[in-house]
Length: 336
Image 1 (tube, rainbow, N blue to C red):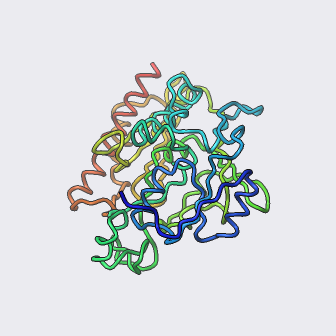
Image 2: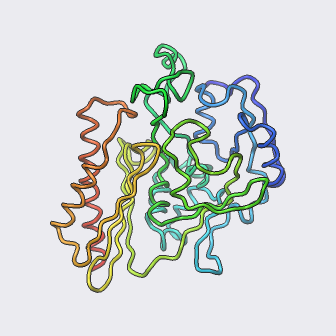
Image 3: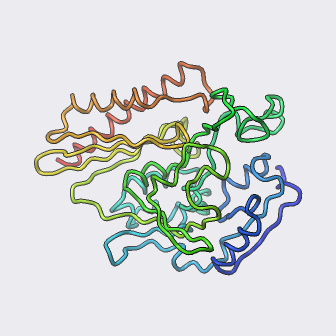
């Protein structure tokens, strides 16, 4: 097993303000860590700062940071340090009210990962790419990549932007439900619509649109209109343990007269997930489902940030359409 980089430092703040001060003292190398299921592996693989300063969040008072519960305004708040196992719990609030999110959390990694991995960590998961998530010697033989040691993105041939993909399972459901991210900096607290958190750049650090040095307190899920149905589809060699090759959050607003609108969120393809909305205004027929699935398939446009030849990338797009059609068909059945 590889060790952490030489010179790694470990800090244990006693409150959030102290954690923020530590991050401000180490703006480039300071890393917030709770479960660390992905971060530690990356650091041992030579990804990220060469002399990281690990700011441990597990000793912070956990009242608001780990709680999952209703707020006075009818929203549901999920503390950033709530574990993935807690979020996916079969008897939990999220399973009953926000099933797509609970389903996605239950498919992250293996059971051991979900016991320690946190919802905030999955949201802020570093982006992934075939040319980046490799052994250091492999990357060195290629001359590095734009995200690590190099100056060129091997996917696009460009030196201006990294297209490493956002691979957190919970990202698509959070976007589907229109979540807000609650954060704090040394200047104060704030909220940001989750769509603004994910940028189009996959580089380490600036791949999140939050203010520099921000600490994520939690995620706020708004109250949903009656009749909203949703599910999560993960496309991967193994539904659990593996990172998704494509992740889909599929939702529909149903009424006694049929379906008003369908929303599809496509993630794990590029740095910025894509949200697609389709007006229905009546019965969601098999023909309309096929049209929506075809549009999603045409709009996915996978890149070679996952290993595979062009036929494999075409398969990723095709299978996305198949899963969308399957999910929408099940949503219609569940509404009847």
